[in-house]
Amino acid sequence: MPKQSKRYRALAAKATAVPKPLDEAVVSLKEFNTTKFDQTVEIHMRLGIDPNQADQIIRGSLVLPHGIGRTQRVVVFAKGEAAEAAKAAGADEVGQEDLAKRIKDGWTDFDVCIATPDMMGVVGPLGRVLGPRGLMPAPRAGTVTPDAGKVVAEYKAGKVEFRNDKGGNVHAVVGKLSFDAEKLSENIQAFISLVVGMKPQTVKGTYVKGIAIAATMSPSVRVAG
Image (cartoon, rainbow, N blue to C red; front, top):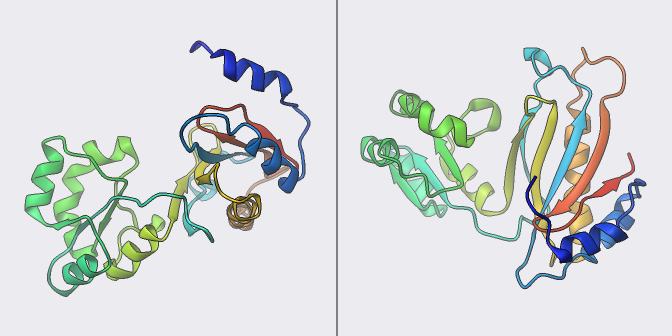
């Protein structure tokens, strides 16, 4: 267990385990804004899915209404017109075999990797590097696409992607603690609504078992379902 700071312990003593309506939960979380830097806010949803069943995997992406509070670094594997469109949309790096070599040699200083379908032959061998970091392009996440320019623009505008972990939990960045409470609530509600709407038909019993929001260096706050 990492050692908790005096500040964290003091905040945790004020926190309550009782779930709160979303608006109240956000207000409570914002009271933890006592650091010198702008903390990132994340949502964590515990789902009643079987992550070992392919038809119960929860994976997708969403352009949050108010972005995530920072500009994401995006690299794109594309050529021709698709490459030019990606550059015009603000991609940080666009390439082919040259970009693949940099990544294979250990360069992963980016947040999102996008590829056009015709470049997957080049991207495929990078799975060992990109996969463990959650950066491997995938059709289901929308990062393998012929419309690279559009997807780059979406990520630059605050798109987030997510996939359930081995425990059946979903996590995502939903903004910064400096966001207005209303904007932060709207971002969180948009994410919750999307995940709720993705409930697999084969799931039995309770689908959403718990929701919590937390900031980088602050206790979590449970959200009432």
